[in-house]
Image 1 (cartoon, rainbow, N blue to C red):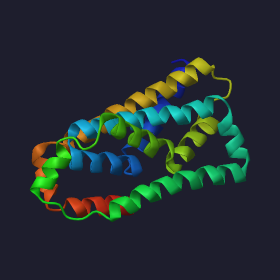
Image 2: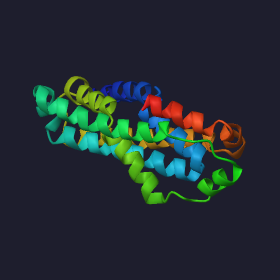
Image 3: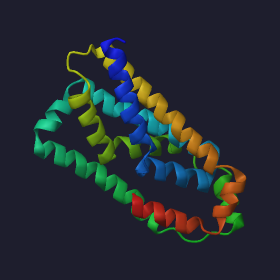
Length: 197
């Protein structure tokens, strides 16, 4: 097996553990899928996958090295990300119970494709957990001598794998039978997701 093949397997395994662990990305896809259905949940999932490319991009241009060496810049980056997650969390904590008609209206498309996709991108791109993960990945696991094209390939794989994973989550939780079970508890789900965020 080539050096890059073994490096890829290590990255794939580490990434699998990271993406499968519940966090803000999972909370957002769950919330979107229950509130708006699998289509909006899937758009959000694709946005989360695209958000991975933000992390990969700054790692490839060397900003990851700068952030890992500057405590002040890293702190500012984390605070911006944490601020966004807190904002979304507070919005979710304010959720109120809604009846079947309101639920149907939300499901009917009160959120656009672009809004759902953007929410996914921002949730991942500003997630301090993801920032820490990619800083570690690109400064510890991936050898600096690895060609940029190979590193970019790793990034594309992680973005695609993340999107596929969360689209699966959206399809599961966006099924009508599952959504109907959450109908009466929808505001509690929102509030629980708010606490996680």
